[in-house]
Every structure is written in structure tokens, then in C-alpha cells.
Length: 250
Image 1 (spheres, rainbow, N blue to C red):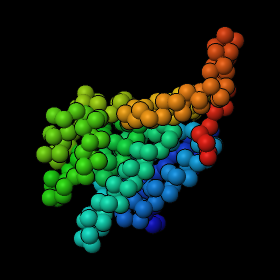
Image 2: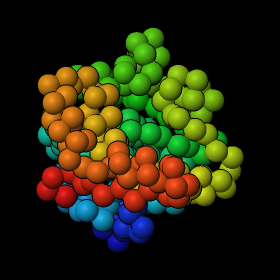
Image 3: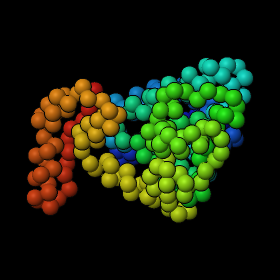
């Protein structure tokens, strides 16, 4: 079976599977190339309200396929950064469901997601110092924004793996689940995300990046969406709201 990214959409949730079990789901150059067009298509699909990124079997992603670095480490890194940025720019909520190793390029992908839920046996590492690679500036800034400067330096300087207890403490993961509970929790939580207002989520995601030039745009979207009226009506009528706003082009 060729290494690839697989995906399926069920009840508004797209699950993207990193599938390269022979090498612990390490990302090949072709797999990195698949990320931007795949997430562009999912972002434009009105049936998709949230995305779960996970790995086949018992590993999330053990990094980049090192054999690809022999050809050109610069090219491989550029592909990884483009994939990471495409994932970070995805307009809908994204959640990394992590079990096993989440290392190197895997940590880049997980870090580009909005949320990270992990099995209690997962391990995390940012390992360029083991290979003499300069970690990309954008990836470094994203890591610092997640865990703070001190924890980011620990990870980058040492390349050491950390467990879920430390990952949770530093903010690298949002929830840690007991063995066997990850899939159930992810399914429950993504149902919650899919039921919420996409307008609220899209605006909050953009604001969280520090962008301040589209306040008027989101005010106009809110006025014309009907989501606020529907949310208030549903609350007063004690029913689930039926939000209808979708991003333009979706």
C-alpha cells in the first residue's frame, strides 16, 4: 500500500488519516504535497464542519521520512512548512487525535491544529537538533505560542521526547484520555463542534491569530447570518439550534 493521506466525511466531521504504518506514519514528500490541496477541498466542502487529523494504527506520526532528506533537506522542509501552514489556515476547527509517537513533522502537523487530544501513552518531540536541521521560523513561533518560550527551548534544544503529563502541563495538548477512551472522546467532542455556529468558530479562529483588520467584515457577517437570532430562539425554546451560516465559497 502506497503511503498516503486518506479521508472520510461522516456527519459533518472529516477524518484525515496519516497512513504509512511501515514507517510509523512518517511523512513522505508526496504525503506533504497532498496536504494543501486536500485541506483546500475540505475547507470548500459545505458538508465539512470540523476535521480530525490522526494516524493509522497506534502511532500519530513519527516525523518526516528521513530518506527524503537525502535528496534535499531544504525541499523536504519547504514541503513540510507549506503543509503546516495550509493546515493552520484551515477555516474550520481542527483536532489532532494523538496516540503513540507525535514527533518532528508529526509535531508540526499536530501543532498546526486548533486542538490536540492524546492517549495517555503518547510521546511528543521536536527533534531537528538530532539531525542538525534549523527548525523553520514559522514553526518555532507556533510552538512558542503553544507552550511558551522556556518549554519550546527545552524541546528544540534537546530533541527529547516528553510524555502526556508534561505535554498537558505545558499546553502542548488540551486533553489526555485513558487507554481506549480517545476515539470515544474525539467523537463526542467533534459532534459538539459540528453543532456549534461556524460563524462564531471562524471569527474566533481568525481573531486568535492576532488579525485585527477584519472586525468590520465579521460584524457584517453576523448581522446578515441569522445565527444570533437562531441561537437566542433555540435557547428560549429549549431546543438545539440549527445554525446555517457557512463561509463564502464553502
